[in-house]
Amino acid sequence: MNEYFRAVIFIILGLVGGASHYFKKRYVDNTTTLSFYEYLRVDFTYTLRTFGAIVVAEVNLSVASTDIIHLSELVGAITAGYMANSTLNKATE
Image (cartoon, rainbow, N blue to C red):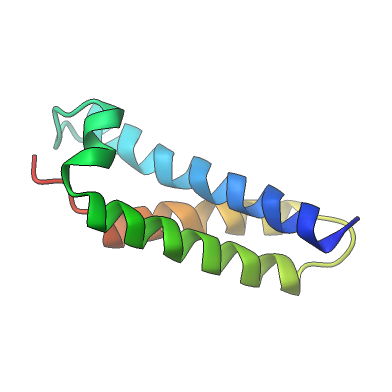
């Protein structure tokens, strides 16, 4: 598998992990009332920082990956995105 294609897969999985953090905040914890679009736009600098952290983390994870993507690597990619959004993206409401 091409290393660039593998990096794109990991980045997409990281973004899915970041989005899942929003859905947990909205529907499980009820700590935000913002829509997903508003959540991304309210504090846009935090969103950009989160996106950058996800891209860097996922590229590094994809470099450490072998030709075959294993389940543990997929879970790690999703978790890295979730963690980046949880740590860096601070919505005001």
